[in-house]
Length: 407
Ligand SMILES: Cc1cc2nc3c(=O)[nH]c(=O)nc-3n(C[C@H](O)[C@H](O)[C@H](O)COP(=O)(O)OP(=O)(O)OC[C@H]3O[C@@H](n4cnc5c(N)ncnc54)[C@H](O)[C@@H]3O)c2cc1C
Image (tube, rainbow, N blue to C red):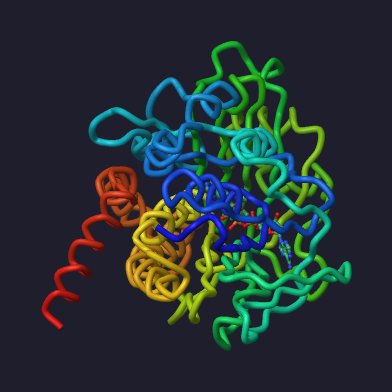
C-alpha cells in the first residue's frame, strides 16, 4: 500500500470524482485532494438512476443507506410502452439475487450523500484545471485561479470536456449525436393518485419519453429524447419552453396519459447528447481517467454515473496493491485494461438502446425493435446489473500476479 505522504489529485468533484475519493480512502488507504472548478459542489436539478451494479459498490463504501434514504426505490419493474401506452415489455430493475434495485436519485441529493462521506478539508473548490505537465518531482497541475501544485498522480474525473484527457493522449473530442433531451422534474403530488411508482418509457417514431420517481417519491424525473439540428457550437444545455417539449408529443399518435404528465411540467431545460467512440488508452504513467472523461456515453442505458462508480472501485482495488509511488503507473495500466473493455461494451450498447427507443436505423420496423428490446431486458440484468466491479478487479489482480511469477 502506498503511504499517506503520497499526493494524489482527483480533478473534478462530480459524482465520479467524489466516489473515487471515497473508494481511494476506504479501499486503497490513500488520501486524495479533489480539485473542483465550481465554487460549491452541486448538480443540475434532474434525476439519475443508481443501478444495482453501482449500488453494490456504494454499499461496500458505506454510503448506500444514506442514498436510499434520499432516493426512491420503485414499486417493481419498469415498463417499455409504445407511443399509445401499449405494453412492449417489462424492464430489468434489480439484480438476479434481488439484493440491489434501481434507485431514482435527485442529482443534488446524490452529490450531497457522496460529499458527506468525503473529508471536506480534502476538497479545493474554485480550482479549474488549466494544464497538466510532467516535471522531475511529479506531475504539475495548474489552475485558472493562479494556484499550482505538484503531485504524484492525477485522476481525471473532469467530465465530458476533460482537460486531463488531453494529457493522456491526442484523443478526438466527443461528438454531438443529433439528439437533445428535455429534462426536469414534476411535483409528484400533482400526479393522479394511481400513477405507477415505476419507470416508464414511451417509444414513438424517432423520439421517446421516460419518467421515474425520485426523492422518496416526492418528485418525478422526466427525460424526453428528440432529434434536433440545433447548432451546438455554443452552449450545449439551457432553459427551454415547456410548449416546445409538449409540441413534440402532441396529437392523436401519443398516449393521453403521457400528455397529461407533460401538462404538469412547469419548467424544463434542454441538453445536447454527446457520444464518443471508446478511447484507445486512458492512462499515461501516473495520470489516468475516470467517468465521463474516460467513457462519455449516451444516456439510454442509464449507465454513465454507474460506470464512474464501478471505475472508482476498480481503481481503488488496483491502487491498494501498489507498494510505493513507483508502482502507481502499473496500477493505472491494469485498471485501464480491465475497465476499457467493460465500458466500451456499454458505450456501444447505449448507442444501440437509443436507436431502438427512437426507432432509428434498422429498427424502423417496430415489430423487430420491440422484439430486440425484450431480448435486451435479460442481458441487462445479467451482464450489467450483476457485474461486481470489485470482484472483477480482484480476479484480474490474481491473473496479473501469475503472469508476473512466470516472467
Ligand atoms: C439526460 C441524461 C440522463 C442521464 N441519466 C443517467 C442515469 O440514469 N444513470 C447514469 O448512470 N448516468 C446517467 N447519465 C450520465 C451521467 O450524468 C454522467 O455519466 C455523469 O454525470 C458523469 O459523472 P462524472 O463525475 O464523470 O462527470 P461530471 O458529472 O461531468 O462531473 C465532472 C466534474 O468535474 C468538474 N470539472 C470539469 N472540468 C474541470 C476542470 N477543468 N477543473 C476542475 N474541475 C472540472 C465539473 O464542474 C464537474 O463537477 C445521464 C446523462 C444525461 C445527459
